[in-house]
Image (cartoon, rainbow, N blue to C red; front, side):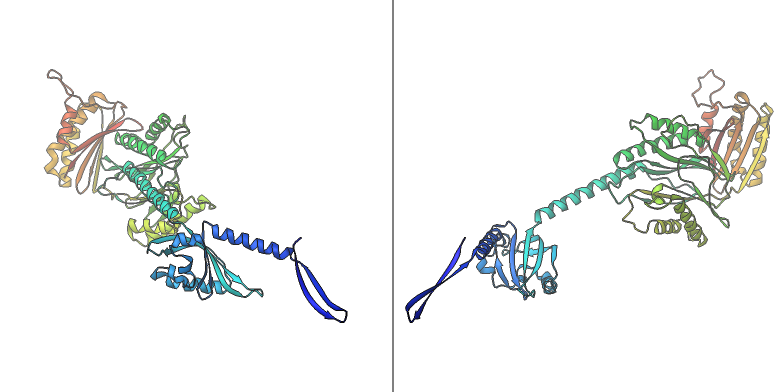
Length: 526
């Protein structure tokens, strides 16, 4: 083992003596070797390492610090560490030194530093105080790592993610479409994409004018997230819109949509959907829900309640016979439809959230601020953290149109006399309503439609007139399920021209299947 020997001469009476002191220096040698080893490690480190006094003067500067900042050890040692800070970050240096003076260790502090050439660096700095033998803080050390490449990569990834999300949301909004403004139907909608993950989802809604004052309202939610869900949503929305325009009953539309989902090349795809048809003249709403959340209805003076509806399985389950229901809804009442992103939150009971939504709506409508303000209040109450929801959210508020100004109805037998009786009823009714200027066109149209009903349908035949401020709608209903088909008649045919005439003279017309029979309707502008 290594020793240290000290020799000392001594004069004695017996002559000159030499004393020897032998000391074991193994621990000291080991410590010196360790210090040398650590110094070599510090000097060869790929991270910049520097030491400084508590007043900020640099006392040590390794080779990596020279490579990083461009200053040699001779140029840096003795300089104030603020040499490395940008002018606007000088106060940051002062604050860091104060924290070190208090004995605090600072880990992975990311900031900007400047090199000898003026270049800017993104750096990750870890600082810790150094102490003397009695534990007093006497200085500080710092390990500095250049993270500029990482920062650039993060910025590029963030921008790429932003672009991809923008593309996805643009695609989704394109697939979702913009519902048309429907005269007489006030509506307010809100859509919020998820702030976590891909953002894009499968929510959609639609407002569909069905003619003769009727309006269809659709809302749906494709289970899952991402472009696949948005793609399925787009296909279903287009199919649902086209099917609804045929005038089919809500339960029939759900049956057809279930077949569409089954045909999609997406295994185990489930979709919740709700379709309502508003009939203002009848003061009713017909509803079919495929596993969707309950529709709420806010009635003036009567608060907010759930609209009763049969419980049906979601679309995609298959082999389901969908059921619908009708409810009386007064003019001016508002329907509230939404997707689960609004009320389904982790750790919260969905029934409680729906009750909360009901309470918020009740308060909002009592303040009479309108649909837009009510929609804002709902989102503020149920989504207070606008940046923290992990599912897309759709909210739709639709206020039922006002009741028609006038309604007239009569029932006729399926005989030839019904045509002349129907014409007389129309002329008399329009004269009473002050609409005699349209009587000739309407009488001719009614004559054609009633003739078809008498010739091809089963009685009795119902004739229904409805007048609003801008439109007159006429409906002829019978018990035959056979729907008329427009066609071009040849020169020697007696029939085939009636619906062509209706299409020419009426501003709009259509046919809708009923639970029993069908209804042919047309409308003319007043």
